[in-house]
Length: 293
Image (tube, rainbow, N blue to C red; front, side, top):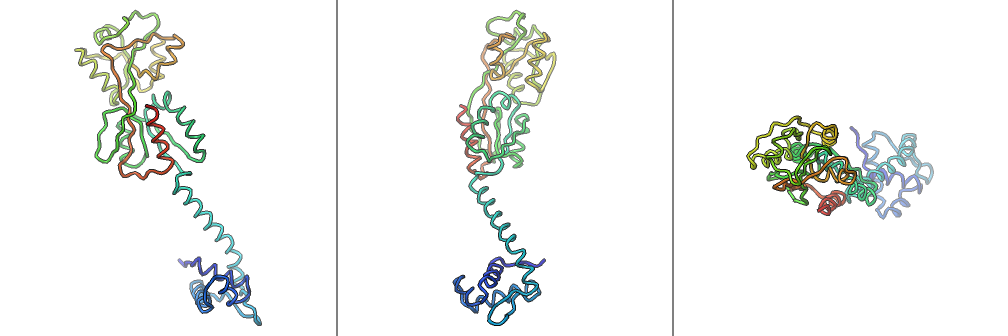
């Protein structure tokens, strides 16, 4: 494929604008032989004469006229490309790919994302939901830039920063008789809806039950917080959910909310690759996450 040297193209345009090699040389701060050499190199690369002398004037040939018709668009395209790269380089444009669980996505992120949108209106933030293992794997594979996940998490290539603790609580139908604090033994006597296996929240709950000497077979296992809340409201049992997911329930008194005994918390952490280049936008997202704590 033939290539055009952009400096030579600029020299060609300058010669046609000034009508002479010497005037073009003065304008470009080059010697006249250097201008002549660049024009010859451009003609050689394109396989056609581009400049002819008409009297004392340097005029474009038919091929040169065709090239001039494209030169402005070429210069505009190059300028636009350089500006776009510059904007991406300082992080004021571009995309941040964020991964987190559905609970945090619904109940924790919206105010944070609103503030980021206000401060960085040209940043595209894409949010992918999944369990901790899925989000961490996507970060390791560079499919996601940053994640907010439930600990524990490990990985030599990862930078893991705990940011906040979220208590897990029991929700139950309003007419279900429950003590002020709910123990594993209490839950063993009533239908319980739990998160589906495989995620860190379910693992934390199973470990809490096991420490209380209870091996619980859930009435149902679901991946959706909202689905669990609706089923509990329908009277199908009680459930253990993150406190952030039931704040509105406390206000509306639609369901009963009780703390666990002993209390149980999950710790949320921000995860990025250690070798990830932190653009301005990614730094802003990272700082916003840390401020959540």
